[in-house]
Image (cartoon, rainbow, N blue to C red; front, side):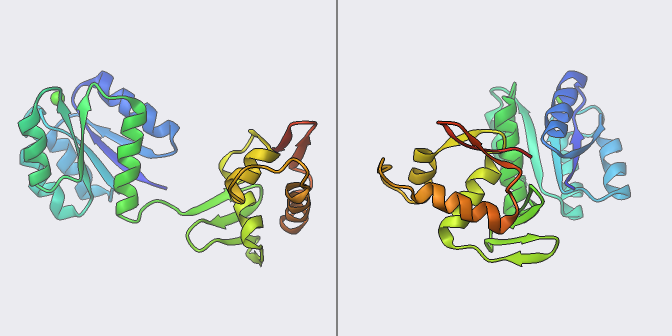
Length: 217
Ligand code: CA
């Protein structure tokens, strides 16, 4: 669970930040001025702080020193055209900045980038009853390790990252084996069959007739 503090006095922007981040699975707490932000970090530990520069009472810059002592990485939210603000923010130790108005996708990418740099993003995917550690490439079910070949792991990850999406054989081949799909081969079918059995996906990895396969979880 990633805990994010949003310090932004403009309610519509604060709401947009909160809703976008909540949708992406983050837990958010909103405060609307500098003092409340200082109180919040005293009471609770945050994994990330989104900090507006122009705040009533204490500015984001004034707050920065205080927040930095608490150890959470900070992303500044700055107004359009305020280039000096961005430079100043980064110099003060902020990890990144977002310019208003921002695109939700950009916001999520920046948040994810900072969390990743700080080792706060889980590298374990939980899909179809499996735990897939994308760093160690270890796969387990109920704590029991499942040993897979490199190709099987590649196919598994492809499905795990694209649940509900039909992946055709040529896509699987190109992504896992590399190179163009040779029409005459049954390699993909055989690998998928074996993979399903090994990881217990017989019921959820479905054949989509003439098209390919889809993971239904
Ligand atoms: Ca503001």
